[in-house]
Length: 327
Length: 280
Image 1 (cartoon, rainbow over the protein chains, first blue to last red):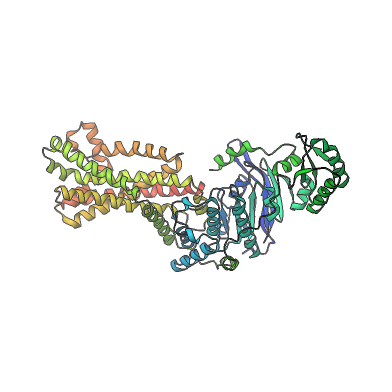
Image 2: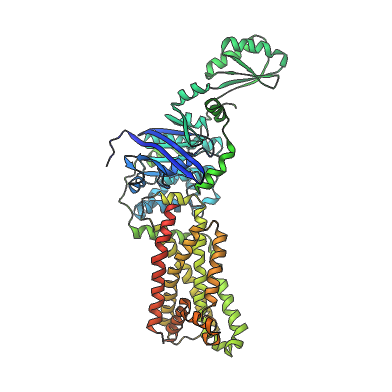
């Protein structure tokens, strides 16, 4: 087996068209073994299609890729034996119970019946789904379904896991649970390719990020590099009295950076990523006699990233095409 | 956007359990082709277990057909209801089971709209296993449909000359034929866009082909062109073979042709279905 390469995924020039649409238009990726690599982009950017090619579900029109040392076209079966896919639509059978889903996969992966049952119960317990083990998955909450989905992906420990938008549509608590599981998986040595629409998610989990738009990688780097190139984030401040805004702006500009005056006459924002410095700045504003109604420190959103990188906001309306075409 | 200062997440479960579950489970040898297919068959059984109502369509329709044809048309077609029952019961057995095969295509098409198929297709298993498994699972539905008809026939006074062995042989032959035919509908299920389209197209095909057979009437009563078609229709031959098996005077040739038709359908459409399923 060709397992000596330090790279889990090496893709060059992957292309996939559906009709006239080039869903993926020359994507290169290099993902180190044992890391989480984020692919960040809006709906319809080509993330899912890229994953489906790498997971051997569809064949690329051009380009090539090796996954864990195996060519995705010529050695598709070897690749399937080493990877696991958690799709954007939950990849579990809604008409079976959670426990049946896990036993089914265990059996398909070659576990003996008794082993498959033990393994299913162990996973249900570990992922906090034990109470609903006997319920049909269609009655699960979004968070439970996602956790079961990930559990289904590790019935037999994979070397590489494709995670397609694992937290889209989840509430913050469920999202954090999924993040914890991802971190634990990586700690055990699994490589993860994570597709996401959220910069924060990629920032929390990924060692490297590729930003993808219209089927092309438009930026690549560590989360820190990416945020630095985008402008790291912003401190948003709201005042009680709009007439105090010039005074607040003067203080913030002196301590931080150029101030942006919002359309709301009582609001202003300033580029800042460091929470300590933001706190000091707010304290200084208050000391200057300005009454602050509220403030928040935000990471740049995907839209801001896209605006900075491409000059246009992330296009949400492209979402139908890719999903329908990929189906 | 405000920073949700990463809310201290409620632990999913206790750390130890999670760590234990994540610690590498050694990869077992791959599941054999047979084991994978049977596992998919088990999946089909589980669905029936969870939603037993889905067996209603394979039980109620045949019951209606038996009652309707026997009592509504029996007198007109065969002179008496009792005589017609002898003729039509094996025929309705054939028809009901063959109608049920359309659902194999509908079920496969429904599956495709769900994410779980992506997972199946990314597993290191024998490629046709999901399809073979679900068609095998469907055979249990054919068995249910067939049994309902035979039991109802016996209740209404049907007494096959060949007794239980003859009935079982006929039932087995019909199920084997249905297994072959269901590959036609799984192919259809992968070519059409929605479960409804599969259902409509499927019945548009199976309905005339079944009615233009000797299931309901003796071919001699038909116009000659139609009679010629009815006589070579494999469904007529299957119906003849079933009647023969139940009456104890089956012709080996009929049985052979029915089996050969099932084998031919499987040989053509099973690989086609597998190819289409892989392509996704």
